[in-house]
Length: 385
Image 1 (spheres, rainbow, N blue to C red):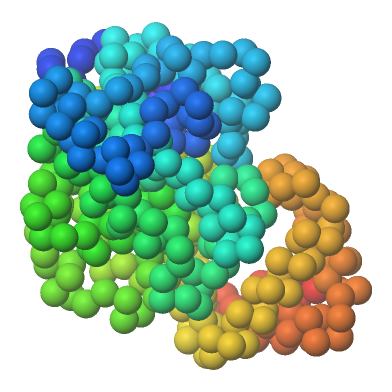
Image 2: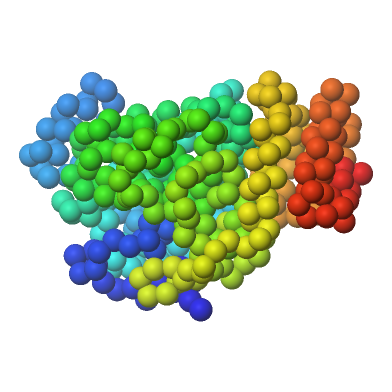
């Protein structure tokens, strides 16, 4: 079966000829992982915002760039910030040459990166003429700061990137065509949904679709059923059959399950998702392991108070940083060897951190034993040996 790259290489119709579809959202969610700083025009500063809005009204559009403008070899070493930089590079070449994507206007780039507050945020808009705009939010990059922010989402009702997403959507909406799509992959999908749930009624009414590709949910109680009702069924949520990231935390919106060529956590990569015409290739339901992992994570998180959970996440972060890896990509590419290094370092942390991690592994293993048996639980405990 073909995958997303096949769609990128073969789809020749423009958006005037064929409407925006789930595959387009998945493609643009990955384009958000291409560093556009210094090329894609930024969001106008507060004093200039009114003039920028007037310019849009008079000229019909904001200052913008094209994908071709990002094709600068001297930037390639640091331009592709995701976990699969080679795939992102290939994606950029195809976007710049595709008659469907090459004339999209890229604008309103905003990036915030702050280690102290564990903030990794980036967003930009992709505009098709005066017809519509896709407001895309970047998922987690390869930095430890980005991954630490993900850990914070396990115990904080909201993290800074979520507030930034809402304010960004409110700020750029007046500078974009009336029809809006809002989306992202992984944390980017979470930010898109958070922004749509939290923004003003005026902006929300302009959103045609919210796209969440294998995105985690929220802590219980963050939003009410009435909040989701206001979205009026406009959320398109997709996860691969053995989803891990997309089944974390709570989201009441039933996902559509996509077939993936990959296995395990590698299914998180949307470039591995199979396509069928102008849509993904769907299956009837999630794999058994995905559902079990969701239940184990939910039960464990519910059993740990926020103060203790924060200390556990801080201990995990200490071990990862102390492992010597430069970023999350090194750990994931190293697979078992890198994980073993992190565990070795964790055993050498201060006694409080070491005990917290050991207890957490034991508690998770007990939950796994109830659902998957003692053999699987023993494998989890072996990680800590």
